[in-house]
Amino acid sequence: MSAKKRVIRIGIVWGVLISILYFALGFVSNYSAQSRAANQAILEINALRQHMADARPEEFEEANKSLHRVEQFVQSFRHSSGDISDFLAELIPLGLILLCLSVFLFFIYRKFLKPFEDLESFAENLARGNWDLPLEYRKDDYFGKFTWAFDNMRNELKQSKERELETIESNKLVISTLSHDIKTPVATIRAYAEILGKKLPADDTNNRQYAEVILQKSDEIAKRTDDLFVHAISMMNRLDVQLEPIALAAKLREILSIYEFSGLELRYQDEPWPEGQVEVDPFRFEQVVENIMRNAEKYAPGPLDICMYQTADSISIVFRDYGPGISDRDIPFIFDKFYRGANVREIEGAGLGLYIVHELMHKMNGSVQLTNLQDGLEITLMFPVFISVVSQ
Picture 1 (cartoon, rainbow, N blue to C red):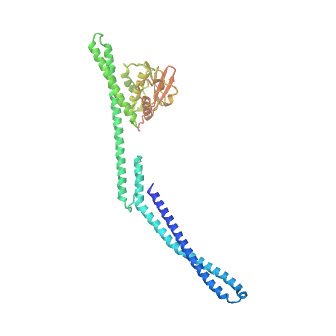
Picture 2: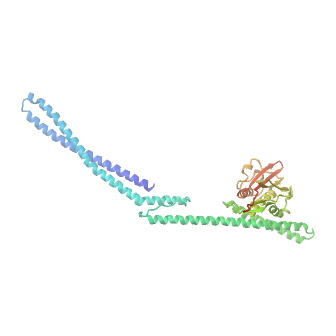
Picture 3: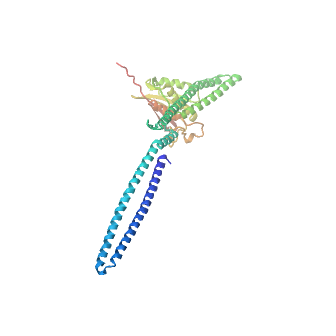
């Protein structure tokens, strides 16, 4: 129960008790006064009647009746007047007592109980993580400095929490960046080790074994960096981008060069590709392409057709594989974090690849579209054409 409710309840109880006591005393007092007045009137009337009894009855009978009625009226009027006066005389002190009691209770609540009630509410807000609601305090309050210290503590906790969140986000960003930066050279090392193993003579057992160890360790490093990257990205609330104009075709060929010796058969369509510029984050664009290529390696090994075309206001990149595609019922949810299609759940994965692609394309002012085909899946990345503004 809050302090305010307790004070109200105490005030009501006091008021009821004083009211009951007042009416009880008033009733007893009025009853006693009326009894005494009635007894006195009866004695006087009896004495008068005794005196009149000595006279002739026929002469005083009417007078006796009239006197009796007058006496009753006078006594009733006097009793009523006395009751009203007594009631008013008792009511005024009672009202003053109730008024003083109310003022006293209000003062106690305002000066002593309300600050604690505010502190209780303030502590509940802090427990719920509401750091923005200040604790009001008044200079004339006995607890002013005390409440100011609590509000100052709130500000310090809020700033500390913000710094902690910034540090956590920064660490996640560093982990995701490092894991991504490690994956690229590891993939290159693996590709060249695979080529080296294929070109070695069959009787060169030692060198073939060395190449096999390089491939094995490269896969282990790639798995560890993938785990780091997935963990960092899954916990991040934001993916920062830094846009700059680049030649999209040249950047795409640079990224695809490390997949020339992978299990995918890359088939470039509709060459030469347009040489227009788009405004993207090169690092994030590389992440987008790598996630698409990794999904193709994992879910649709085989030929992968890649083409690029340009319209008046956009440049699009199309990746077309010949795998199982995506179920129509999974399409609306495929860009959700951790969502995986029903037809690929037996294959190891985290369900973050297309989520990252979608988020990064949105932040780079582009879009991604999936199209289910009869014998595969088509992914289209679309970017607005960058138009350089030259100052006159």
